[in-house]
View 1 (tube, rainbow, N blue to C red):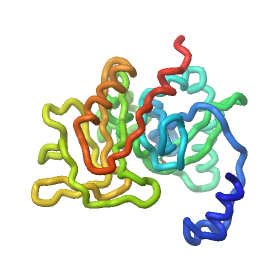
View 2: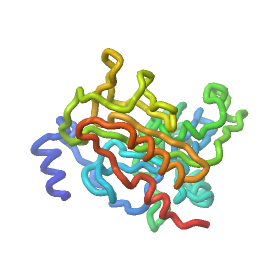
View 3: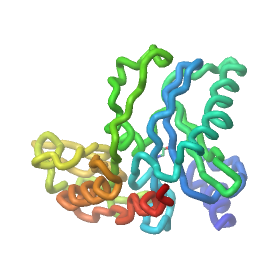
View 4: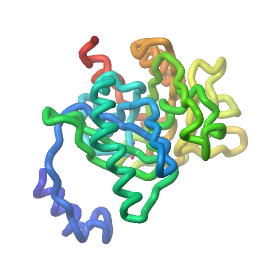
Length: 263
Ligand code: GLY
């Protein structure tokens, strides 16, 4: 796998010039956790944790994608692990950026792996995550604009319960896929009738009152409920009501989260 990845990046240049240099990293194994946080450079407030499912196929098989679905909160991310991450990762990151004269204000994204040697960072992003945001923000109880610029004063509250987002992708994604296929099941406002879940449009276009596919990840279907089991089952029930030619989705979003030890 390593040889063929190097060949694809450096010889075949599948990522263009970005493949000219490679960084070889330690292989990290364990449940993934995404923690988005609000920061103004002095205060850092983590949002509710989430779990992305990056591989294209069930059982975490197939190529990496931008994310095929998410759940929040992530049950693997216990209060003890959250406290450790705050002390060992989040605050040191914020302080190190200040020390370098690169104070960051906005949404800082920590992509973590909970390895047997403790939590480790696999990636940072200075933006919200996709499709993490589709499960994190529906659980936010505080007005986001109220918090802006007043992080130290505002108590950022989260709703109880869980959220699940199932991505409906074009057949073939993340490799070549068709565009322009009509989508069935949506109303003109882009939502499902009766609104059993929220439909987030990622790769669609609206023409003469009808939606068509227009990207690799086409729609994100988010449901919230008092339990993770119920949120997963509602998201899939809603996703079942939408169709287009070649539609691909994972059938196991939330399965790893549901297998987390219960306390
Ligand atoms: N879901 C991964 C990302 O937003 O980078």
